[in-house]
Length: 397
Image (cartoon, rainbow, N blue to C red; front, side, top):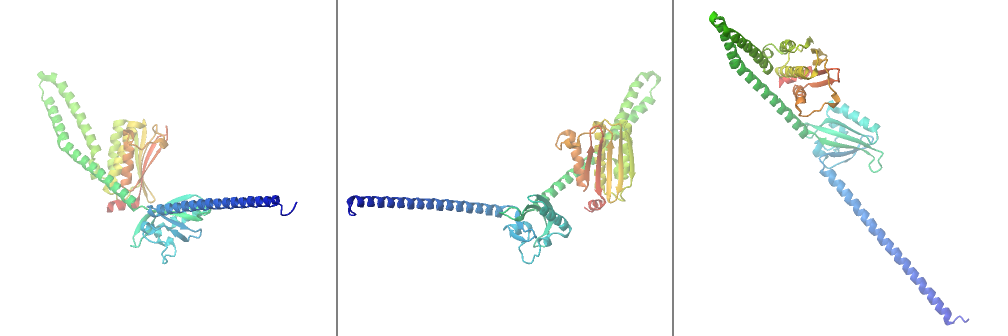
């Protein structure tokens, strides 16, 4: 076949056209793939930017400041609100170490926090400290530190700083309110006790004297009236004793005149006589001076504890103990009654537990701590512990 044969040329043209079509199809596929890749890359970049912007806004608008530390304790990131939260910029070149901003009395606990965080990857630890602001005053700050050194995207120790000023102010306001409520309660109790003593008790006593006098002056012809007068005298006597007991609960005279221990001794004697429960009272030391507020709070706690012993414990023995151990003044009321499961003690407003909640509030009011020890069938012990130096602080208020 000649080289110039039409069949050969037709075959060549057909093959060439097919090759061109394949090339065009390949180029089109490459272009489309590239466009899809660029579109996907652009979308991923946009999503990354949005996530970064979202993270930036969350960090900047958070009430907590975020600081990232290296394992050597160097700051390499601080959120823009750090200075607003803690009161000073940790990136200030004049600050050699953020620890320099911490109150000297709190530095050890912050150092311990750092040590604990470094030892435990992905663990979170919390502490509170005071940090000096640019006004040279001390701000209460909560530090929440997490070890993220092993996290490739972070490789730092993340510390959230939270300003506790408002929260502590609110807690202080609540304490002042609780103190005011207690003061009003005691003032009202004192007023009611005074009125009862000056009016009802005096009138009852006068009525009893008149009944006794009339009984003695009866003639033989009127002896039939005498049993009635005798019963009336007995009822009046019982009423007078009950009013005196109520007066003692409202505001014992011995507490104001003689102090805590004599007042508790008088209450103990009355408690033994009235309930038949063997109550032991002893003391191994008392502070030289107990402020009036502390005296009243401790007396009320003892009163409430004895009321619980009488109403709920089913005990036949109890004790009240005073002691000074080191720098701690301790008062305890213990019984051998049925006790209760301390782990299941519900702190709520049910009437059965209002007394315990009130005792906790009174102990907190005088700067002490109330401890409740109890187990089923092993009795209950209520302990109040007050640092001796707190007694001076309470007195100074």
